[in-house]
Length: 481
Image 1 (cartoon, one colour):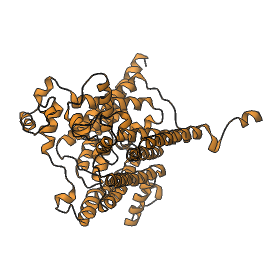
Image 2: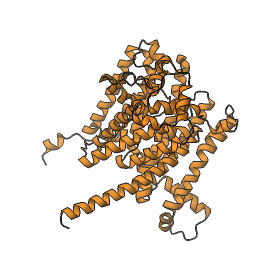
Image 3: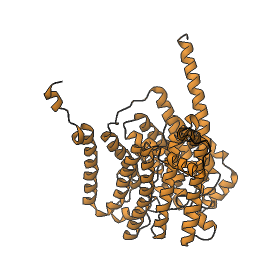
Image 4: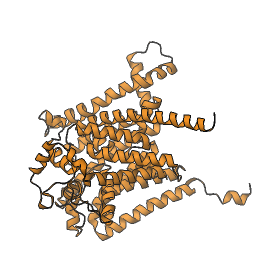
């Protein structure tokens, strides 16, 4: 190799990947400065952008994905990702308790009902075929995985279609829901609910109650309720139980064999659980970082809401002169913490609106979440931030690569993504919004979602394994083997 050839190759800090990663960061900085030059109140939206960027960095660093967690457990019996997920839950729960005690919590519990199990099972079945959960698909898209980009498109449009669709299936909705929906005091634009999802929402969901464990025990406004009921009983204790179960069923046997312990003591078992938790440094670090960041995100959003005297970003948009795409109530989707799938539904619905397909006459968009321009969609920028953050990390680690899917994987991505979108809407959230953000804030419905998702994922692993065996047998027969 010539000296000239060697000198021409940048290395270390000035490698091509690092320079490209820096370019992505500078792009986000420039966009942020431009938004602030228009109106400093856009700082509220930029909080979503930069926390999304940080989520993306950590997700890619730890290759953090709930689909991987359930697939690895059922298919190859490896608990690594499930352990990282539990670490994140524990840390988020602790930070969320501090935020709540400080009076800046933006959390709102999900309606508790059977729809969570059904939606979660559909969602869990879908993630097996896409190879990524909602957050996993976003960070993998940031690595250049075009299959994950198809998943995001499928999630977006399937949700937008589901919440607005109407047809013969409307007649399958229970009459009790129809009657309950008709009895609701609806705005004039939505007096007659049309479409099964509108009836499901107004006739069923609105009659359910969302709650926290502290509220169940009548301790919602007390420090003891927040710390003992919401944090300890709802999050920390189940996490400890799950970690012990993961150790007992998936890690213990190998650990004792490696350590040479024949008659382990309690101390040996605790050491084994600790070894399991730190067996993958990247995953553990990602879990710790995600848990802390998710809590801080809620805190910063809560502080800004108090500063501007608002409850919803829609109020701020109105004050800045932006009203197009707001709901009837002048609101937009603005959870105030880490959340995925609803903003993707807005992307799909907004594009459909541009092609003349009206989605604003539905309860989901027209009354509750709106259809803002993607350039004014705060949670949407959080998802974009995850993609860009993952790209920064992947480029710096030389793991970015455009990956074109085969026809078979593209088909699975679209079908699986569609199922994920349908499941997320039925369960009123995905693995982040309906599980991670709920149990950490004292809402027990999140564990119901996880249970349903595990059922669906287990069935998905079985079906996917059958498909792979059948496909391999068919190829062998075609080759005459």
